[in-house]
Length: 113
Image (cartoon, rainbow, N blue to C red):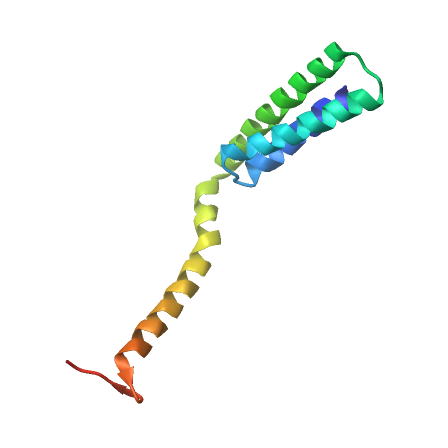
């Protein structure tokens, strides 16, 4: 049970710390539920034991996600997120500028209207 709590909390914290949107919790919870149900069936646990473990996995994933978001917030994560996307935007902007300049040239000479 301790491994279940620690593992799902850490998984949620990694998802929150990695700056995923909260919608990532839906597939994470579904995967956690599937693993919990399969493990319960394989170990021939009772239905209430499987339900309790499923509730624990769901709650710990959510708490871990909130803890991961809190770590990013305490670290000042909004500034570093912009730095991740800025180089890609600059590269794309430069490429579009080249296409725009190429559109105005004819035979190496710039068209003037």
